[in-house]
Image (cartoon, rainbow, N blue to C red; front, side, top):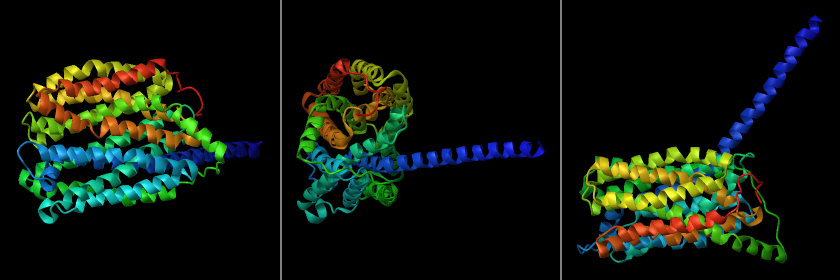
Length: 439
């Protein structure tokens, strides 16, 4: 009896130790998956954010100044051209992910993205090499666009597929937080640069510092992705390839309609620093810090919205977010056009960002649940990047052009509202996907 009383506790201890070991391995595996998936998304959105926030300085370095904001217009045109490359990059990297492995696709995207980031940091300006400077700027942006075309879809696919049952929304939300973390870091770095250096120094050379800082993420991302396991895809015959085309084209419009509002809302938010500086006369420091606070607020909403979508479904969360944004956008645009105080601008941007966070939370999981595994990365990449090219990259350009021409924010506001109504119409007819297995 004495021996039994000693043996049973030992067995229980061994059982607890084994359970703890498996739990620890599970946590490490989850952390590894999350790190590999998110680091590239952080860099992707960081780069695009820095370009948008320092658009004035970039226009001064690469275009002649004529006093009519032509240089700023051309800068945003190149910014938008980066988005036109995204569908091509999404198709190429998406096919790599669906035909070879998710890991290979993620490695390719981080390498090409790194080249574009370093290029932007070291490109000589117009005063050094003349008219070749804008051309090289365009090449660097196209490289970033090609890489970004496969980055979001590849990372979202990888992390949602790795999610435990009932936690696809949570894992997708973590990925979306990383996407917002990129511009938040960009805002923080941009704000520090604006606080430390004078406007003359920023326009001359200090605008390059944030791109150099972003380049530090490249080796980190490359290392994380080298360590993840391969996910090989069997070779497909002709009939299988035909079925894959059908898999992509079938849910494409619904996926496109879900992505378009995300881009329109996000890039309207990222445009606010330029709007408040150029048209309201706020300083660069005040504009950037106000936008930083708004993006932090958006990040705080994404994960709760994602977790809630695992419990109540994707449709209720997304529909409520669409309605809120559609009602709030006209009011917020009118207010920001008539507010010159830093506190007022910050509050308005924060309200807009909170509504955007409710929409962003369930978004990655919802998108992944539309496509079957054999074509998921390709389908997501195409829908995400075609919508991004139309509603994302050119949003700052459209806003600048409409405000300059009509001298009002009314038309600019309509861009965001139209995309949200499009998404709402599609989601109202959609089926719930949160409680079924991935196709």
